[in-house]
View 1: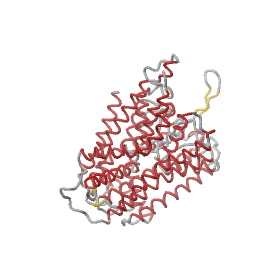
View 2: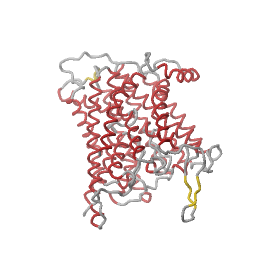
View 3: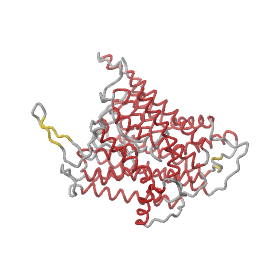
View 4: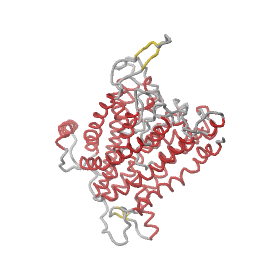
Length: 553
């Protein structure tokens, strides 16, 4: 409990200074950090022929999607040809076409859903040139989009996608990832291009021990809210997560940028109180989720107790003995709240309530969320809260001095509908047509399938493992869900930002609903919870809630 408190305290203390630094880094006017990074950025922008000209929202969207689709095609080709390419000392074969399709979209969509086992599915070149490359560019993409949307809400030009993409990497992701990779190496995480080691055990049997450039992979995996594992068991592997210190550093990296974005927002819109309120509101939801997860996992399993297996100290099923119940619980909440998807325990073995909380984090997608994408959803719910407040008092709602009218609300309503459609419709199809791929029966089986599509739509990437997901149906369906879940909301909310940018500012009056106090924070939390509950509660009742009610001592 002390280590958890220390982790949350450090994350809270770092959030504001990191946020103020990021706001300064993305200010196109001269700043104190330009000299430190200009020598990297200027040659890159010059070689690329990129001019420092602002784009409208349509140009920004076309640039974003065009670059991302091009990267997907390049990486797909690398996966399909990896058996012919260098840096493949273990002789790993080419990826099957539908699996390569799924994996390329997964890492470009910042989801990192893996239908392959990390150490046996990809060569070192694929891990470094394809996977790690996307682990930088994918979060930088939504980072750039979030900054553009904040600029639009603040009444400033949206900026230039290419410049924002470069700055997200050079000023935030690369420097922090480089330093933390060295720390992980010091903790015992491998960083080598040597092949798999074949060792002889005490019993005389041969054992293959996978290794590789893990530390550089791990640092950006957590910082960029990516989550994919170099090894099949992800951060439950001792080479990927050697000890409690590395475990805490991983969670801190997951939270580092995501918790800072409310302060970036407050600084860039010129109202720091608004950033403080959103940070506090998300913090309250996070602490509630974490508390219930700890209580549920520490309560143990009544079925095991009835069988004479003592679980009074918590359910250790599927958890690493190095971390125990508490560190596993907090990791599961952090990774789903921060849209990362890394795991140090198997989520399939969580208690029904513990599993439901990880699902809920992804369904709401507003409790900090991943780099950029989660905060974009936060801003969407903030606008909805302001709209509802305006309806209640019979006044046209205003947000940051701009009137929220039918165009903006139609775009937001469509965005709200797409998320549950991407989860619930494919879940129904999979349960009906492909029951043989589901390794669990009854309520838990439904949760297993729903978790896979929720993780895909929310760009999280964790899973209820045991699902037979490396098949054409699962590879293609989750690939489509990941792509739409990633880019649909970016397009619609950039359109909202562009629409508000084009409007004239409305002077604040006595009837203006303030968005920088606790009343708004309460309304924001209520809006997120109520909208999420109305959308997903029936499905949760049929899955984890029903499973919890059927547990009998």
